[in-house]
Image 1 (cartoon, rainbow, N blue to C red):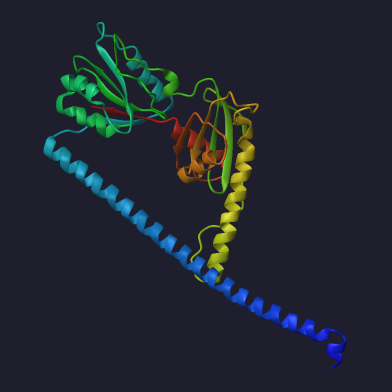
Image 2: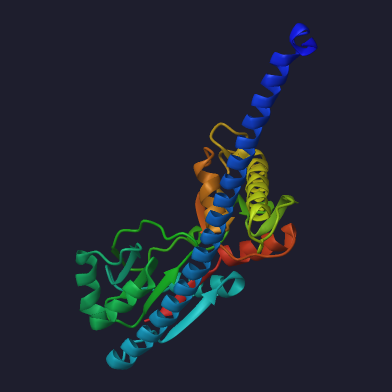
Length: 310
């Protein structure tokens, strides 16, 4: 009776209703957490299966390539990863090569392989070995009309070079070697490193690491919570990276400086998509360790050209 007189009865009823609603929300939250945990576990299992399948595909492709080479007798005569002084030496040899007028062909080959018109030109010199050019794509192909010299080169970024017949190969050193003032940024889920270079010499540097949780093997609510925390940490890290690269966006103070963005492919792509960056090049590189040595490894990997002698 006193509760009714003092208005406490309605308050108690309201409290009971809110407690019931709170219980329903708690159960709903726990169910959603379990669902997210199951989804995260399923995603991890799928990623592991995908990685195993990709490894198996790579293994089978290698076996297939060896079988095809055994059957056809076609294989590159020499393959080498070129960088630094060795790369400069090889480029010097190629750029000093001379023939008669329209005796040296240079052509850029994209990921889809040779165009039909260029294939016909190369087949007259290489015959069936033109298939080795498709295998090297994307690349630059240099062939002389006598078949004395036939190579492919895969620089950091293959230029859009139309088939060009001249008395020498149409090669530009900046396609292969760092020249002028430029920047290279390395981005991982937990790391950022940016170097400004004059040619091959680094003249400025900035780097940092972010606290991002690693993998998690437990199931249930703890895993769902772990996934949310980790995703948030990666988002925060990418925001720091965007801030560090803001000067290289259109209108920024360093917008005129060529920027190459390298690192984990998914992170690099996300950073480009979520900003107004227009990098001169992007590349997936495997660079581990602390920011400064990791950047050195990434730059060395990025400025590497694969040479194949056909």
